[in-house]
Image (cartoon, rainbow, N blue to C red; front, side, top):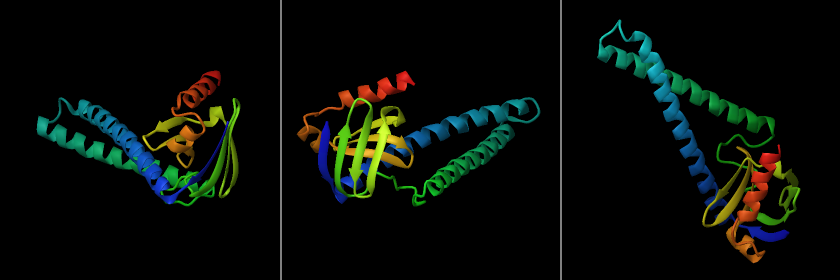
Length: 176
């Protein structure tokens, strides 16, 4: 199946907002889980030696330090991955969100995208996630790369929903 469309700047902004809010939710949930676990693990050894308020203060400070160190490490890794891949270091940038004319070809084995900055080919197993919104569908390769298809382009090609695409991604993950 071949899908031809013009990806506009307005559609890029919507896609970036959708993907950024997804990342923020994931990061917030991860950080809350880490902070809670760190607080419990840091407070427990001091259970008998200090009064309750002191234990809570020490646990909160240690949790904050662990949270800061983990978040800094995550940000550093994301920036390093972007640098290594030759992408801009700004965190909001994902390759595949550039405005311009595109042709996306979907086959049983791969996704081929010809866009404003060249051609990219991905096997279905390369996609880690499929993000859907009312305006678009994004096939996520990594934190710095995706393939975005507007809903109107999918509908025009005869695929109003993503059930076929989601099935192909799931099947590729199960196979590997």
